[in-house]
Picture 1 (cartoon, one colour):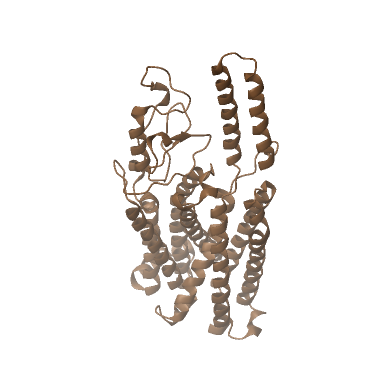
Picture 2 (cartoon, rainbow, N blue to C red):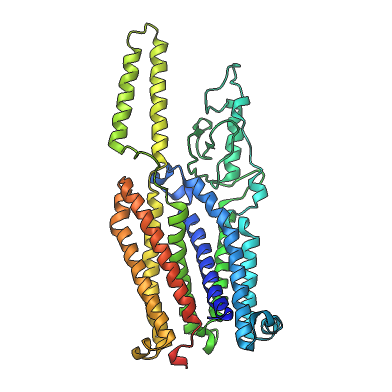
Length: 454
């Protein structure tokens, strides 16, 4: 394989994997939407961290998408002109400006550039600058109304209105940063005394119209996210317009089926990859966390110990203080345990979306195989058929892994089995690697002439 072929295969794989990553980020961010996640996920301490990681991945993936698209067009121009890649830049410019193939590719470049430049707006409905202008509440510098020091993590009465405003600015996408204390999670629907702190930032839903600097309403955010979906759909159409499916014209059933196949495959790969490497909680280091029964027993023992300490003390304040200490210790253990909880609603949404994607991939894949092979005998003895068989085998292996997670690992993880949660994450990681290999087989496949079209 020479440099031109390597550039052709590598660029096709890179652009498809990066596109899959963008679909995975956008879908995961939607599945982690805070107000609708449910009671099981509302206490999941890693939610805000996962959303921040997803946002950080968007622009690099969009830039990789742009680079892969440019490299794919470059290799196509070199192949059409019969020139070495480094001598094909004049042919590339001619192809981009004078052919339908090139104009479709140029449109794909525009879509990927727009996805990279408008990333924060597309994901959150506002710019990074507006997000960073939220209210900062210095806990340690505030005093209570009577002049006494504040308890750890307590909001002064005068700061509650500012905290509510900060929560409205963030509108559930992040939590306000505070100096000298953990982040506060503030809900715009609760009273001023509902502000809480913990060892992780949980997801807090905010309803109504957001106000203040960097504000936006949920409707505005939804419109920007719909724009992101539109750009991704347009980019997929540009990719399909540069494939064998466009040989009979752009407005054909083959184009629509190939577009659906590409979107579903990339959605599956992206959703699994993002879940495995970004969203799903990592196994706890050191000794295993106690299960729910052991945690309840530890809390009961702490309370009994507090009662024993309070006995024999004449002053009622001593007993109250001991009970408060036991309660704080129990709350700290609960917060630590919550960081390892499975994101139940997210896993259900991931599993359901993957199931729908696999069914659609099977249906569209059968049509594409029939359209490309013509007769079953063409599945063997040619590069196109060999690449197709490898791709099918890898997809079936990945589907089997997804079935195991859906039927066995996910239900046990939802029931609180941390071993099953760790196993589900490992299976997702292996599944993502297998699907990436299937995407490489697909890149080789599209570079070959289908036997039915020879």
